[in-house]
Amino acid sequence: MKKSFKETYSTILYILLGILLAVGINQALALGLSTDLPIVAVESNSMIPTFRRGDILILQGFPAEQLKVGDIIVFSPPNQEIPVVHRIVEINPDGTFQTKGDANNGQLPFEKAIQPSQIKGKEILIIPYLGWVKIGLNEFILPNIIFILIVLLAAYVVYTQLFKK
Image (cartoon, rainbow, N blue to C red; front, side, top):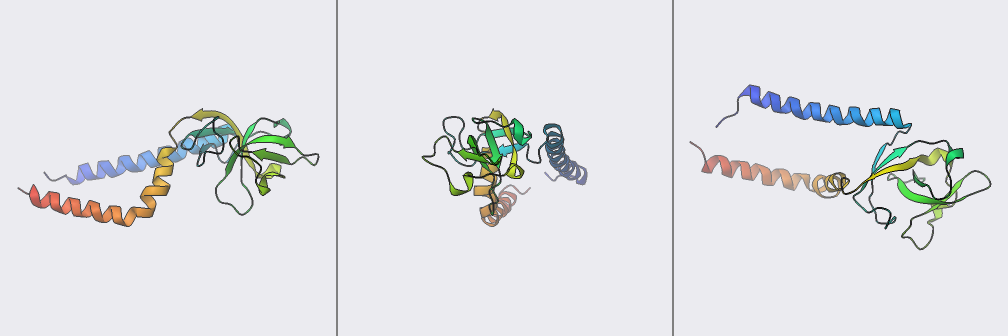
C-alpha cells in the first residue's frame, strides 16, 4: 500500500503543528509564570525524597525578596549549561542565596552565593515521570541517531522487499 501525497502532506503538517503547539504552550507558560524557564526536567536524584530524576517541575518567577529558606529554586550556575534544582538553606546578608540538594551531604562550591539574577524560578508543581521523555531523547536517542536511522532504513528495506506486491 502506497501512501498518497495528500496523506504524507497531512502527516508532516500534523507533526509541524504539534511542534508549533508545544513551543507556543512553553512561551505562554513563560509569559504567564514570569520566567524564561517554566518547565524543567529533573536530571539527578539530589532532591530525593521530594522528587526524583525524570520528574517535571513547573516554575514561577518570584522577586528575590519573596524567596525564603525552604523554597526549592532552579538556578543557572556559572559556566554550566544545565540548571540546578535545590532548596534554599540560607539567605546571605548581601542578598545572595545558599542552596543544597535534599539528598546531598554538603553544598557544592557554586551554591554558597547564588545571585538573584541566576535564579530562574521557584518550584510550584511537580509532575512525576514525565521528564523521562526529555531525558530519553537527550541521553539515548540523540547520541545514537545515526545508528537508529540505519536500523530504521534497513527495517524499511526488509519490510518493502518481504511485503512487496
